[in-house]
Image (cartoon, rainbow, N blue to C red):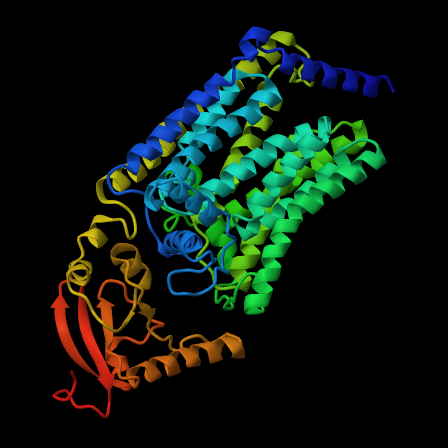
Length: 556
C-alpha cells in the first residue's frame, strides 16, 4: 500500500518537475524555439520550389484540374471530364480558394506546401514542449522533423500529404487537452480537424477509432464523455459521410473503382520495413534488405509500449493520453496502409504513403527519451545517487551523440539532396526534361484539330492545356480484376474504334520515354487502324489515325 502511494507521489512530482523545467517567463516564450525551426522549414521549401515550382505528378494534375473545374464549371471533375472519386476534395478546394483570391494554382500549391512544412515542424515541437516543458527537447524534435527525408520529399510535390500531415499533428496536439479540459469549443475544433483530415485523404478515417477510444475513455464523468464523444463523432463523420454517399451515387463505390492488388501481404510488409529503416539509416530503400525485421521490431515496439501504458493507466488510474493517442495512430495507420496496398492496386508503398507516420514517430521517441532521461526519472533500481547521476548523464550524452551523427550523415544529407535536385531540375511534369520536351513544344506551336489520344494525358494537359484521351487499356493485361472492370476496359476500346469512324480527325501523341505496358502501343494499334506519321521528334511522335478501310493516299 505504501509502495503504491509512493509511486503515485513520484508520478505527481515528476509531472510538477517537467512543468517547471523553465522559469514561467521563459516558458511563455519557449514556443519561439520550434517556431523558429518551423520558419526555416517554410523558407527551405519555398526556396527549393523557386526555380521549377512544386513537383507535378499525375495526382497533382488531378488536384489542379479539379480546382480549375470547381471554379469554372462548379463541379468536382478532372480535366478528362471524369468525376473526382479517387481522392476527397479538400486539397483541390483550398487550391481553388487561392485561385479565387488571384493566385495561380502552381503558386498556391507551392505556398500550401511551404506553410504546411513549417506548421508540421512547429506543432510537433509544441507537442513535446507542452509534454515536458523543455525547450531543448522541443527544439531537438523540431530539428528531427525539419531534416526528415519523407516530409521534405512530399512537401516538394503538389500532393495532399503535407496538408494531411499538418492535420494529423494538430489532432495529436489537441487530443490530450480535449481530454483534460473538455469544452464544446475545443471538442468542435478537434472534430473540424478530424473531419478535414478525412476530407483530405481517405486514410484519415483511422482518426475516427483513435479519437473515439481516447475521448470516451479519457473524459471523466460518464454523461460528459457520452455528450462530447457523440458531438465529436457526428461533426467529424458528417461531411465525410456525405462525400462517400455522393461517390456511391455517381459510381456505385464509396471511394472510386479499384483494381485488385497483385502484391502479397509479405511483400508489402517488407517494403514498409525497408522504407522506415531507410529513414534512420543512410541507405536506399531498394538496397535495404532488413525490411521484414524492421517491421517486426516496429510492430513489437509499438504494441509493447501501448500495452505498458494501458497497464499503467489501469493500475494508477492516470493516463498519458498523448503517448496512447500516438501509439494508436501508428498502429492503425500502418495497418490501414498495408491492408490497402494488399487488397487494391494502388501506388507502391513508399515514402509518400508512410510519411504521415514520421512526426508521430518523432513525438513518440521524444516522449520516451524524456521519460527515461528527463527530470523525475530517478533510476530507482540504482541505490547510489552519484552512480545514478553518472549513468543518466552518460545516457544523455550517448543520445545526443547519436542524434548528431544521424543529423549530419542522414537527415542533413537527404534534405540537401532532395531540395538541391528540385531546385536544379524540378520534379515530374515541372522538371526540365518535360518543360524542354520537343513533343510538348511542337504541340504548343501546332494546333491539332480533332481528337487526340496519348499515353500521357496529364503531361499534355498541365503543360499545353490540351484535353487529350488516354489510349485504351489491354483488358487481358490484368488477370485478377472484376468482370465489371474488364467490361469498362473493353468499352474503352470500342469507344476508340468508334472515334475512328466518326469522320473527325484522330491523332496519337506518343511519348517514347513514358511507356505504359498496359496500354496499346502504336504497333499494337495497327490492328485497328491505319497510320500516317506527321512528325517524329526526339522524345515522341505525332501520328494521324484513320480507319482500316481508308488507304493512306485517301486520308486527309
